[in-house]
Amino acid sequence: MNLAHQHAENKYQSLRTHAIATAQAALPQSFQDSVSLKNIDTEALQQARIWEARRQMLGTTVPWSFVRSYPAWSARHPNRLDVATWSKTTLCGLAIGIPTKTGKSMRLDVIEANPDKTLLSGQVFTVAMIAFQAYARAIGATQIKIMRPLNQKLISLYQQKGFIYQKSKGSNPEHLWKWL
Image (cartoon, rainbow, N blue to C red; front, side):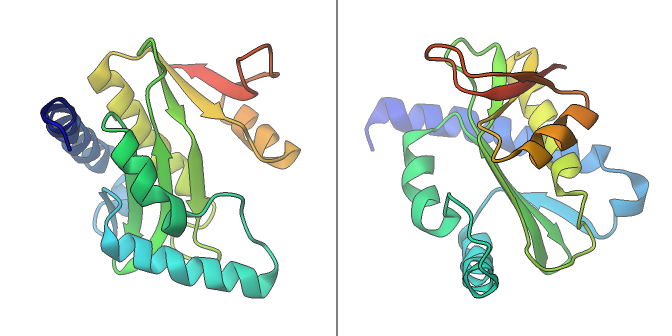
């Protein structure tokens, strides 16, 4: 890793740590003692491997593999936000994203919930958004964008959360967005 990349990694790791701590403190009171937010680490990826095997058994595979793709992706994006959402020792969700090139928006590129029922079933997106909003504010972004939603059901869910749908236009891919 060259010096400039290492400097960027250190700078953004400090921002990630601050954003995750801010988000942890902002969790609903009912989650304060049972939910923790962390960066994605080896333990989270080991759990994701179990998820992938489970999804394969259920026939519900997803198009992006945290296990196969996250290590290289994270190395390319020092400005990333990566969040693992835990309920005690159970991994409930994983989410990753990067700022847009202008820095005015924070993208949520991939979010995945545990395929089994957990304390946070149905809440993984809401909890991840707390962290993404904290990071967006830390970097001076004014919008959150959810990139390339997988299906109409998710588009509807995100719209219920106040996001506005934007069809693909030129080099701008399909996404939803919301002002902070």
